[in-house]
Structures are given as C-alpha cells and as structure tokens.
Length: 624
Image (cartoon, rainbow, N blue to C red; front, side, top):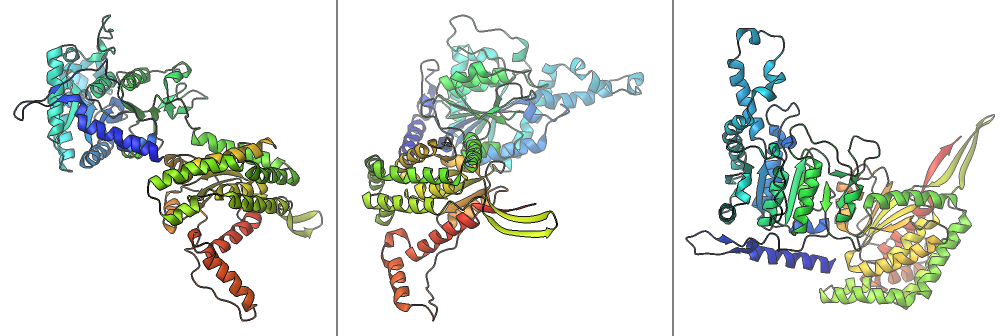
C-alpha cells in the first residue's frame, strides 16, 4: 500500500507538471498543444483508491441526467447537486471540464410556449395537448438548441456563481475535430481557460450543424482519431484524451454497466470492466432523450482507456456521485486495464463468508476443533515462511520511519508463533461445547417446552490494528464458533497478513470451508462492506477509540461492538490475595509496554473469549 500510494503520487506530480503536454509559449500568446492522441499512452489508475489523486477531470452529463422524467425542461435539483460537486472539486485545486447536454431540452420548453401562442382557436380548445403530443415533430431541434444555449449557460453561470467559480462556454461541431487548425485552436482555448482557473463547459453547436446523432457515419479508413464522434460520449472521450485528463466520469441514468439489459432477469452490475469483459455484455436500447446508449458509452470509455484516461460510468441521479467516486467508493463501473492480481469483489467475499459459515455450522465440533489444531500446527511448521513475509513488512516500516513501539507490535518471532500455537490449541480444546449447547430447558406445559440454545451469529467483520498475530487468533475463534469471518488488518502488516491468511485457508480446506474466512485488502472495500447488512451480521473494530467511532458512524444497519478506552487504574478487593494480585498487575503493566497497557489488553482478551463463546459469537435462540 505504501508503494501504490507512492506510485500514484508520482503519477500525479508527473501529470501536474506536464500540464497535458501543452508547449508553453510567450506570456502574451496562447500555449500550443502537442497533439499526440494516437501515440500517447499514459498510465491509468488501477484501483479505485487511487482516484483521489486525479487532478484533471472531465465530467459528462447525459441528457437523461439533466432533463426531467417527462422530458420537458431541466431537472434543476439534480443539476444543482452536480454543479455543487464540480465546484467543490474545482475549489480543491482540481482542473474540471464539463461536457453537457440539455440545450435542446431547455429550448424546447421555451419554443413550446411560443408554439402554443401560434395555435388556432380549434387547436387551443382541443381536449388533447398538441404541443406535448406532437412536440417532437412540430419543434425544430436546431431552433430549440439556438434558443436553449443562452438560457442553459445563464443557468450554469448563476449556479456556479454561488460558489465563486467562473465558467466559459465552448461550442464545438463535428468538423472541428478533423481540421488540424480548428482542433489546435480548440485545445489552446481549453488550456488557457484552465490556466485562468475557469471551468470550461463544452457542448455541441447543434444550431449551425446537424446533431451528431442524425448522421451515423463512420470515420474514413486511415483516420488518425479512431473514434467516430456521434454523441457527447465520444466527444467527451476525445476531449479527455486530447487534454490528458486523469479521470473521465460519464453520468447517465443507469448505475453502470450490466452484463445484460438491467430490466432483464439475471442482470448483474459490473463494478469493474476490463477489455476481457466485452464478450459477456448484452446491450439494450438507449434512453428516450439520449443520443448514444450504453454501447456508445462502453466504446467511448474503452477508447479513452486505451489512451491513458481512467473512466467511470455512473448514475448521475445518485446523490454525491462525483465526490463518492473520487473518494474511492464503489460507485458505477470502473474501467481499468489491470487484470493481474485483481482482488475479489467485496460482495463476493461477503457471500462466500455467508456460505462458509453455513458449511462450518454443518460440521461436528470435533471437525472444527481439528481445523483449529491444524492451523496451530501450521504456525510452527511454516515458521520460516511467516517470518520472511514479516521481515518485508518490518523493512518497509523502518524505511517509512515507523515508531519503535509500533515496530514491536508488528514484529513476529519464533517465540510469538509458538505461544500463538499453544493458544490456538487451547481454543480448540475448549470449543467442543460452544455451538448447539442447551443453556436452559423449561417445560411450559404438556408437550410444550422452551429451550435456550447457543448458535453462531453468522458473518463477522473484524477490523484490527497493525498486529499480525491477531489474525490467527480471531480466525481460530471464528472457526471454533462456526462463524464466517472477514478480516481487515493494518496496511503496515500486509505481507504478514497475507502469509497468515494462506495458512488459515489451508486449515479450512481440510474441512471444505476455505471461503469461510477472507482477508479484505483495500480501504475502499471496507467502506462497501459497512453497508452490506444482508451479508454481515456484526462488526468488531479493534483499535483506537477514533477508529471505533468512525466505524460506528459509517456502519449502515449493522451493529458495531465497540470497546472502552482502556484500564488505567486497578482496584483490588480486600478479600483478594494481595501477593497474587500484585504479580498480575506488575506483569500486565510492565511486561510488554509496546503492546499498550497490557492490563487492558488482558481484560480485552478475556472479554473477547468470553463473548465469543457465550455472547458475541453465539447468539441465543429460543426454540419450541
């Protein structure tokens, strides 16, 4: 994670200083662009967590996003929300360009009023509304665009002015991109506007040329551009590639790319799209007011991706979609070229944990205990493998100047692994009576009995600090209590956690439930998991009080088991053995200072074990 963040930062700095390969001219004259669209190949972001480093953004607003559901006029509330997000990105120091539709829709509303005034008396008194029924044939789109452009830009200007952001209108036509001189002028203008801290709003000039969707011709053979500009999707892709944007956001009226039309049974949203997924997609029809459709969006997105622009297709009607995407959350479909080492989606991990928990519940207590014992043996037999992975984490932590107490927590050695193995065997030995144990049996009446039986919770999400020895302990507790488990450890211990997780998977494979426990790798996946109440039953954060509060605030409908700040004072009962109590307190406070106040740690471990077997991992079921 350190390396990924460093690479992303270097990429950001490289792009910011290159300023999209614009060759700077004199201070008085405009800067000239270096048009290398076909040859240029810059690095794209491979993970959503890297999108926060995007400096230059292109946001495309589809017609279905801007217009109302009745196709008459603009959706002002939705548009205001998008403008607010774009303005916030601009004020954060990002360079934002917008490709917008809506001029025809805005103008049609005005022309409809004029059309109504021109109706005859018979048409006016007709029970039908001819301006709505036949508006598509009565209104000329070019005239509507001419009327709507000024009103649309006035609306944008008023909205952005609330945030102190200046905007500029840039109208383009299809021939502008195939003429070298006009293309150079266009991108010189965009470069100058961006350098002056102005947000360019680009739209097609449908008033003087046919709308792009009316002439569905392909480019001539041998064209340098390689994409036909038929709609705003292809227009935004072309602009993004020319100005070397870091991120292109295509906003539509669907949540993203589906493997088949969303209204069909079995349609599944694809959170990530690679070039290998093209053959598994079935495209449906486009929206009523759109000009491109999903097929056009995918073609434009893949074309831009091939030229080094990361792309996200999302639903523009979703609240705070742009800010959520930049924050790295799983919104829409993320286009990436990364196929090697691609992590399993979190929804799949959560589903597998649910299935794995049911498999664990179907096992006998002896089989679960044997799996825990096998894990304990692996900690000793695979000691060298574990310590090699831990050495990588220690070297990386030292390189980044991690504090010595934290290094002590992070380090593993032979003694720690042996103690872990002994502890796991104790868990296995004491776990035979955990699940299915009758706590209370009451006879209410003849042939009517009430039983209180211990059962597993289901699926647990445990977030722990940079202490790799916690992973096998928590995994063993979950295995012994027949729970599914999702683990998120600190990034400083990533190599150690992966090595230990391999051993956990190997132990679970002996009972056919290797998916019952999984490791969550990236931070944005945790954000997604906190809203999966259908798959996760309890969240247990182990760390600072700030971490616990953050998880409690972000968790949606999933209970969070927090913990106290820690024990700083010790009270001894007058009837207690003072010599024994002093020995315990001295050991807890002084034996291992790097591991926080150990008295608090001892009590937390005791509480964890107690809760695992009687409360937190074993709910009470009332059965008749």
